[in-house]
Image (cartoon, rainbow, N blue to C red; front, side):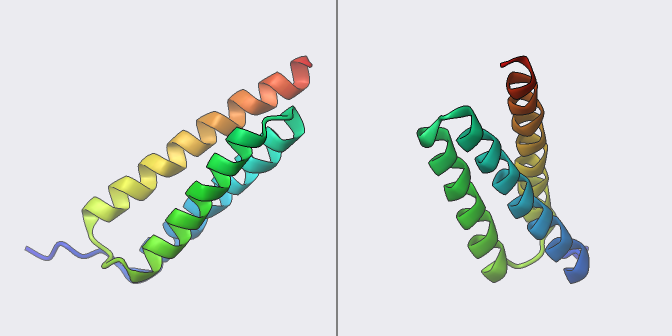
Length: 85
């Protein structure tokens, strides 16, 4: 069984997984949380640089997907706080 995925799909998910935490970092900066901004920027760096050397497997895709889903949740929650503030 071939456990690798198409490289273009993997790279698209890696870029999205890096872009969403970047949006979260901007939202957290606007909320005034330097700690969470630095955490989000660390996730951006780890996701971007770790995915460049990673073999595109299904396990790596699941991890990138989890980062993407969590980032979307954090962005949604941060936007709700910004609108309520």
